[in-house]
Image (cartoon, rainbow, N blue to C red; front, side):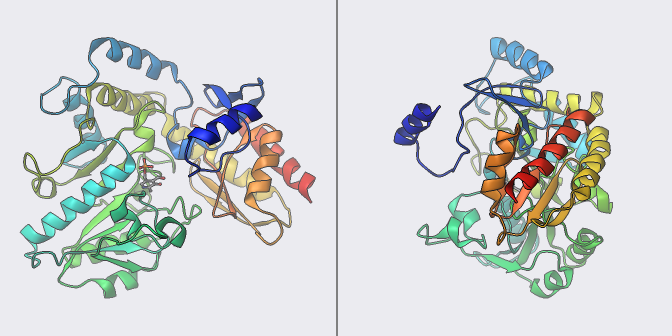
Length: 399
Ligand code: PLP
C-alpha cells in the first residue's frame, strides 16, 4: 500500500492527512483496504454515508436513473426534481428549496438569500447587510465562508476576505441579542458544532436564539449539513428544541453516500428573492441527484433509521462514557454522533486513530483532541460494542 500512497502524494495536493492505508471496498458499516484488512467505519465521511456504504436500495436507484437520465441542467424541467423537493419540504415544514451539490454551495446560497432578503424586506442600505455567525463555526471553505472562520489555519494567506460578518460566542444567546443592529439580516449557526469537536450548546440555546431572531426580524438560518437527516436522533437537530428556523441548509447524507447533494430550504418570501439568472449551478438538482435525494428520504423513513440513530446513539454514548481512562476528558453527543475529548497533553488524536485503525475501527480526530464516533445508522448493537471495546483496548495499549 505504501507505493499507492507515495504515488498518490506525487499527483494529489496534500490538503488532507489520511491514515496510512488504501481503501478499496465498502459495504454497510464496513470498509476494506487493498490488503483485505476490514475496518468498522465510525467516520462515515463526516456523515455523508449515514445509510452505510453501497446501500442496496441506493445502488438500485442509481442504476435505474443512470440508465434513464442523469444531467440536463435546470435550463429544462425534469420529472425527478419536484418529487424530491416536495418530500423534503413536507418533512422539514419549509415552503421551498434551492438544490445545489456541496454543503459549501448551499451555505453560499443561504448567505445570498439572506442578504437580498435584508435589502428587500428590511430596507437595509445597499452593501450594508450583516450576518451574525458563531465562533468556531465550520460552514465550508470558499473564500466568503472562510472569511468568517475563527481558524487561522483555514484563512492564512487566502485573503482578502469578504466583509459583512459579525462573530459572537457559540452558545450565548444574549451575545446574539446585543450583536443585532438594524443592518442585521440573519444569524447563521450550526445547532451542534461538528467540526469544532461536536460542541453542544446548553439546552434552550436555540429556542432563545429563535425568539430573539423573531423579535428583531432577523432570519435564523441553521446549517444542518452535518447534524441533519437523523444524525442526532431526529430528522433535524432543531427539533430537540421544538423550534422552526427560517432557513435550513442540508447536504452530506442527502447524497446517500453516492453523490454530493445539498439544498437550502426556506420560506416563500426568502426564496422569492431569486429570479432567473440570480443564482445557479450546472449540476444542482440534476435528475440523478434528485432521484438519489428522494430515495435517501424514503430509506430514512421506511427503514426507521432515525429511531435507530436515537436508540443506538444512547448505547454508544453510555458505552463510551463507561470507559475510564486518564486520556479522556469528556464524552458528549446526541444520536449516533458522539465526540470523545482527550487530553492533548497526554496523547494526540492522530496516534489514537492510527492505533484504533490497527484494531479494526476507523475514525478521525478534530483539532487534535476530539475523536468522532458517527457510524452509519445501519450499524448493529454488537458492532457498536465492538467499537467501544476496541476503543478501550486502543487507549489501554497506548498508556
Ligand atoms: N456545513 C457544515 C456544518 C459542515 O460540517 C460542512 C462540512 O464538513 C459544510 C458545511 C461544507 O460541506 P461540503 O464539504 O460538502 O462543502
